[in-house]
Amino acid sequence: IQHPSRPRPPIVPPSKPTFFISLSNMAPVKFDDIPKVATGILDDDYVVSGYVLKTKQKTAFHGTSFSSQVDIFADPKCATPAKVTFAMPKPFGCEHFTVNKLEMDKAGKFKLEAAKGDVLNGLKVEVKSDLKDLNKVMVCKTYNPVPELQAKHDFLAMNPKEFTSEVTYAAGKVTVGAKCSNAILSGGIPDFGLRLLNGPFFCSLMATKGVSTFDAAASFNVNPCVKVAAKCSATQKGFSSGTAGLVCKGLYKAKVCSDGSASIAGKHAIAKGLVLQGGMKYSSKGPTFGLQLSIE
Image (cartoon, rainbow, N blue to C red):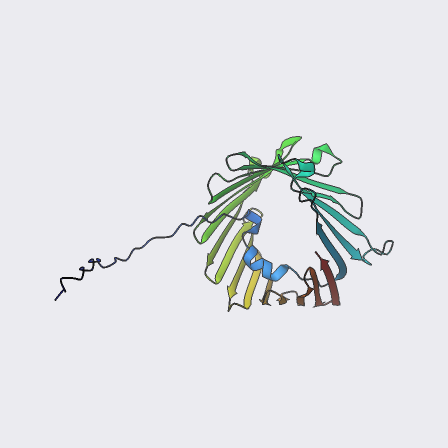
């Protein structure tokens, strides 16, 4: 019996199950990054040969940053060949474009990458040059009309017929993509990619080189500390290569490859802004070792 002084609680109808696919506004990755979740575990941060010193310093001059990389004892003629890089988000106070990279390597070769965002709604334009040959100036256009879709078109400024185009689309847990070059004008076949990211599980499949080469990759988060991954390549003639590995706490890595080689690597933050990385690889050619010190 309902007490007269107490309001009657509202009647809530029983919930009905719904069946649908959630299409979140997940930004799609670039085509070449489709397998990155797994391949990053197997390929990144393996310093297994050479000795490298990296430094990075951000300044108060309109956000300009300076980076350097010294490959110690890499060249018998020069014990410390270096590469220096500037990044200027507001070059000399100009807010109309950014200089993402102005680089000179040990051979005296330059790289310039400048970008202008929001040229139109969702359109970004980049220009890449070696500051030497106008015939090598590359124009890169990236278009995101909606969050789930990304289209890229790169071409030589002096010869627009030399181009590379790609498109990727993310629908919830799935991302699909295709990439082609100017070879498609003469009957070439695009490259295709597919990836699925569902909770701790990730997998991808790439079909490239005229759908004659297939690359599969997968990873699984065993727990918050350990991730395992594997990848393999195959052609129409059969299996080509494979790699399996794991990473612990994002710091310690190990992998084995089908060519018989094995690698281990680790990363340790000595202090704030001072990181030491090292690793070892054993193959049929014998062991190799590597160290890298990064200062930021």
